[in-house]
Image (cartoon, rainbow, N blue to C red; front, side, top):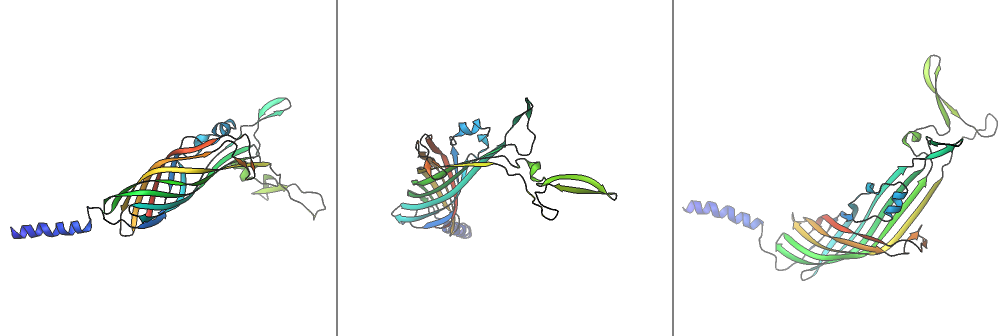
Length: 284
């Protein structure tokens, strides 16, 4: 009976020493790590106008992914402060289904410089956070807090008409390419259009396409209440997961064109949606 008691007691003692089921009395620690954030946006900026240009806004990444870094540190009692900085982007594009009038006959355009339209949305975000920590076990805790800071949203719209399809990218830019047979050997002949000058003075040119680029930007105050769970996997490595709701507003008339002038009749846009963050950190 004594041996059985010893065999049961020793493993149980070692197992309890590896994991403390009780919360710590003095809370402390901090950490830093990579923290991607996923925001399920309710709406993209100017989505109806982009669709009117023929762009499919469903091709934008949603959830919108922000790649960032996050840090946190104990302040006092069970209060903790932190910081976050991140950057993310998503884009969509199309080649216009162009029609041209040739000899009073409307035809499908099949040339190499049909208009290309591309829209890109970019977000940069910097914020600080304050949260209240509720330890459950020594290596597991739940916290509730809010992240507040500044965000900058850019909507870039590029419209171009040069080398817009896949085949044209690999085409000869200075003339034509013919398949010929020279001394019974199949080869290629590159024919180029030369500029003015004698036989030793040639100027090889390619057609320049037209490109227009409009960059719209807006700055907003970002607010994100959240709840988080933190699990200390190893002595200096842990996992932190948080979920919340993100909201920021770019007011009417607060969009800027090419970073210079405000657009007086620009629309209000609310950058909002449920958010989810994961973080692998180094620290306590």
